[in-house]
Image (cartoon, rainbow, N blue to C red; front, side):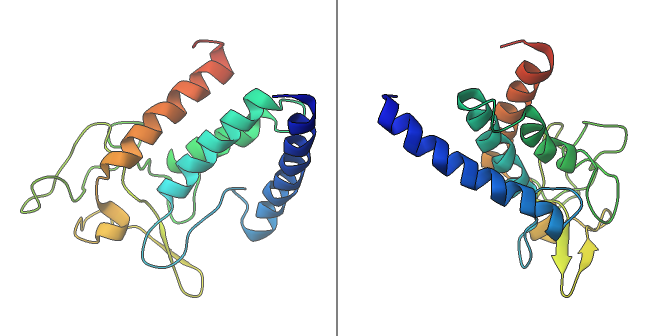
Length: 162
């Protein structure tokens, strides 16, 4: 980046950081939580990836903790329960999901589900025993790809491993 581009980008990143800090006013997890028909694992993982990339470019503005919050969220630090929304990852992970064979109760190790759905006005829901609520419990392929990137980013931030 040339200096003028860096200055403009830095201003935008500082504004973005102010928005990150306001997330704590919306929820104690400090991540964007979606409301409505689709749960929030996608937003949490995208949050991790975006903040990792910004931390790489502007570490003095975006602390590494911003990049780790999204993974903390999907691993069980979220409303409603302490279950990990990645099957087979964590001490308590998602065991019942809507997978590639929709006639049964699927389990795909490493599969990521949308997670906790916030129903109006503020009720968190994730049915562990009923996979057919796809907005909460469907394995989503593109989310798994982003999740792999996010885990590698966290590994680099925590252990210096690329």
